[in-house]
Image: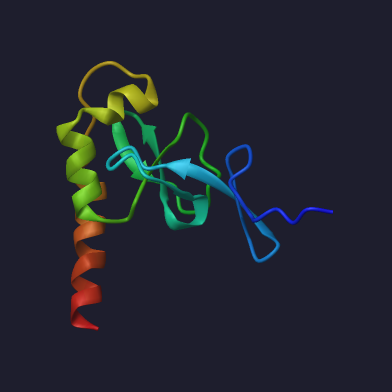
Length: 107
C-alpha cells in the first residue's frame, strides 16, 4: 500500500496524529490552527475577545498581535467578517493586545 504524507484535508491540520481545525486571520489572511488565533465577536457595536469560544453571534479570528489588528482595520475586514454595517469600536481589543505585548517585552 502506498504511503501518503500528512496534508491539509477539509480545513483541518493533521500533525502527529492530532487533528486541529483551521481558521483564517481576518488581518493577514493566513490560515492557521484555531488554537493559535483569538476569536472575536461583536457585543452592542464593540468588538470583544471571546477567550472561551462560547459567546453567541458570528465570530471572526485574528492573531493576538497588534499588527494583524491594524491590518484588519485598514482593510475594513471586521464589518465584512461580522456581516454588519457601520463602524465597530475596537478600542478595548486594542488596549488588551497592547497590554499583552508590553507584558511579553517585560518578561
